[in-house]
Image (cartoon, rainbow, N blue to C red; front, side, top):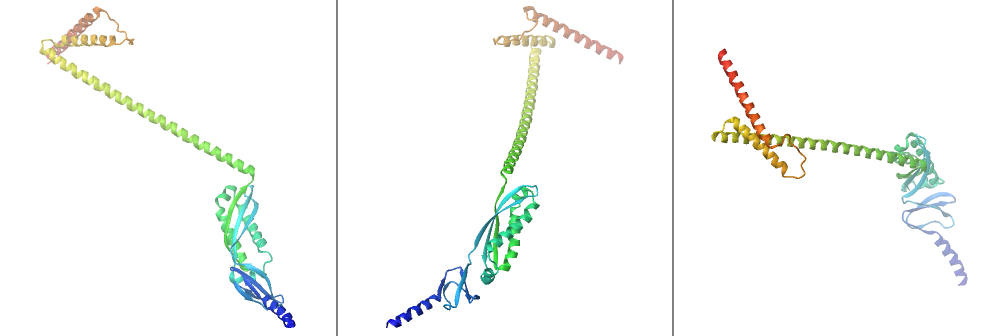
Amino acid sequence: MTSAIVWIIPILFIILSGLFVVKQQTVFIVERFGKFKRTGHAGLNLKVPLIDKIAGKISLKIQQLDVIVETKTKDDVFVHLKISVQFLVQRNHVYDAFYKLQNPHEQITAFIFDVVRAEVPKMILDDVFVKKEEIALAIQRDLKEAMLNYGYDIIKALVTDIDPDENVKIAMNRINAAEREKVAAQHEGDAQRILIVERAKAEAESKRLQGKGIADQRREIARGLEESMVVLNRAGINSQEASALIVITQHYDTLQSIGSTTKSNLILLPNNPNAASSMLNDMVTSLVAANKIKESDSLNENSKQ
């Protein structure tokens, strides 16, 4: 009985050594005497004990590799670009992925350096920021074509960071600040110009309305004088006397208006008790002379006819 147990335990151990479990999204490489035999997929697998061995395993999950590349732009500015590449092993090309490449990460990194240092030196620094999507597409295109031969598929390539030299960043910020100050000055100038134009328009409109008001005032004064002349003529006062009376009345109205305020500095010359009488006499004399001249002109025209 004891001898049987001694034999059963090693046999059981050998049988159990032929069983292995593979996790989901993982492939095991099984070799027999150093030669590829088959692949083991997710679940419980069996290999021949003492003959087959697990040479390695490959993940079928999407992996990401971050690479920082230093290169120079067309305008001689050194920049650091952070490139993120997402890739996976093709399920049907596990053999190529395991046996053709010793270190796939180093191979992908080398291709990234090659593509970036071929594309970025064609661009100036500003274009590197603007066209980073084009750089990423170029990396993805060239890297995908190269890595398919090794069983790897490139899912996505991204330029996640562009970091120029610190002095270059300071200079770029100064240029940007100066440009913004220039734009601000232009806007302020435009605002001042608009303000001046609008102020001039407002002043012109004010003058126009003021002129219209004066014209309306004079029109109403003329209409009032005309009505006053009609009333005076009906009272038996001729046009000469009526005109003189209206002038005298306006003269005294003006004096009364001036005297109603204590802050007025207007002085009328002459301004004495006899001034009104002299003004009336002068106006009557002028009107009489004007009538005589008019009658003389009428007689001359009649004699010529």
